[in-house]
Length: 336
Ligand SMILES: Cc1cc2nc3c(=O)[nH]c(=O)nc-3n(C[C@H](O)[C@H](O)[C@H](O)COP(=O)(O)O)c2cc1C
Image 1 (cartoon, helix red, strand yellow):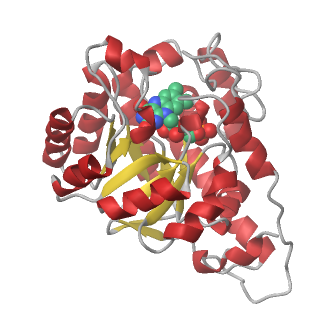
Image 2 (image 1 turned 30 degrees about the vertical axis):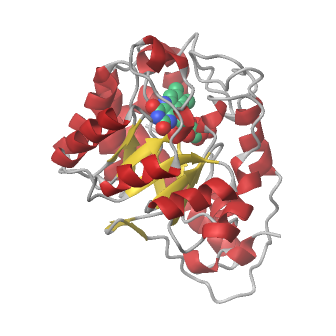
């Protein structure tokens, strides 16, 4: 199967939920939630893609960077490239059941590992969502990162204990899900976290902790102060509130504040290896890929996920060659 065949198959399987557009940019699906869109006008999703497209590249080919090293270490695990699968749940209502929650988790965890990378898995109102991710991670001896919703403290501790038992490599929390309604409606309240609550959460686990959903330098600083091992600069794919800026827009000021004090991951609109290079040049240590992997999973199963990730790695290498970068430490000069 090649990428075109995977897209074609996904287009048929996702009919009514995702059009599998030539460019996955949030325009056609704006406001479609449940579905694959961004909330409201869809501006947050669109801004992610637009802000990345606005970054221009320095074409440089008079150099000695003849080979490109992309391997990256996260929490002691060496990855083929600084690319991870973003946590996604709710596939039954967001893509109409083309994959079950269990199938999706299995496919994304296995496909990511096959490509030499890693997946994060998510959490949601139906307990099957978190459990499916955890089971898939447990099956590969812990090689994945479960991301917990900002539940009440005692619930967070309980979920973290389950993640530790599964042998997970790290634990995340999508703090930007603080206001999502389906959790409250299902009797599982979520809410914002104070610095002191975040500190207690970090202190409660021996695993590296990731705060996902940071969009300002001030909140990145709070994550550092709480003792987090990483942040994900993210607006949740534009799905939690309308009119947020694009992540590529806020990444430089966040990196200026906290680079080197924790790992900086970023997601939102990353579609090509050139986009990966741009995010790294803007200050990220690694990127997460969301919607394209769900589409790949629907169209091509775990092989589809692996192929999309391997293609991103190849494109990243090509982008490094064309901008004169031999390794990830020298990407700053790749952009204008
Ligand atoms: C259908 C769908 C479900 C998602 N579910 C979760 C989730 O359970 N937990 C989470 O942290 N993020 C969730 N996200 C956000 C992604 O992790 C990620 O931040 C976003 O999709 C990245 O943008 P991209 O899709 O443009 O690559 C979800 C996104 C989508 C599209």
